[in-house]
Amino acid sequence: MPSKQRGDRALVFHPLTSDRWTDFEILFGERGACGGCWCMWWRLKRSEFERRKGRANKQSMRSLVMSGEVSGILAYAAEEPAGWCAIAPRESYTVLERSRVLKRIDDKPVWSVTCLFVKKEYRNKGVSVQLLRAAVAFVKAQGGTIVEGYPVEPKTDRMPDIFAWTGLVSAFQQAGFVERARRSQTRPIMRFEIKRPRKSNRREVVG
Image 1 (cartoon, helix red, strand yellow):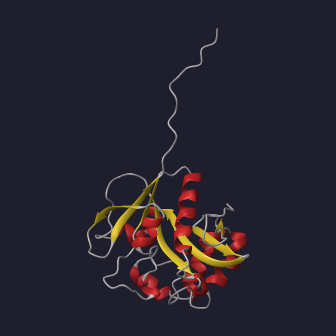
Image 2 (cartoon, rainbow, N blue to C red):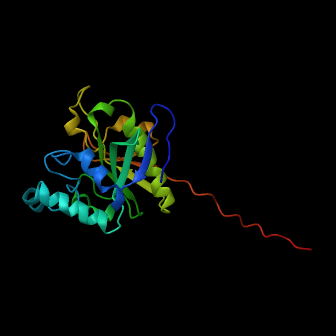
Image 3 (cartoon, rainbow, N blue to C red):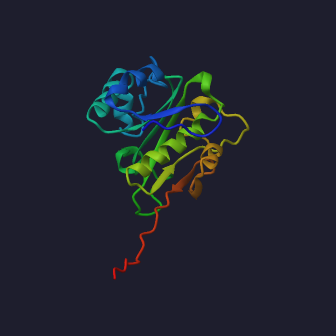
């Protein structure tokens, strides 16, 4: 799904497929983005996640990708992997489904954005906003109608990047997301509802 988003930086976006696994490895580096996570935080029970930090989490993510399941979007700048947005149907995330603060607000099928990771030199340049727009475009192409995110809204003006891995409220707002629920002062549930063209009821008259 190559696509250039408007404006600030010339980025190209692709779903993470098996042929792009090496790019994902390069972007996440030795630490798996943060503390050996490899974007498995939301997919495993806490005890299992802690036990599998590092190589085992990496292997789980690799197996997921090699199975053909798309688990997110990669951003490229000049053919270099520059950012990542995890996006999948909400039911793919075991921990999210058990969360009290982030529990479902209705029974509608949604796709969830659970992680945004941007390479250091590309941070604070609007890359997260563009990744969110690319995620919405991807979900639309899959026939989905609702994209949900769980960003943080820090109490201070500046939050260390390591604590903002689910994204910031401001980025989601810029990408067109709207707050739909808030059970925690700093953690709203935000949605982008994809509008589908209405089917015409008119019948063609042949005469």
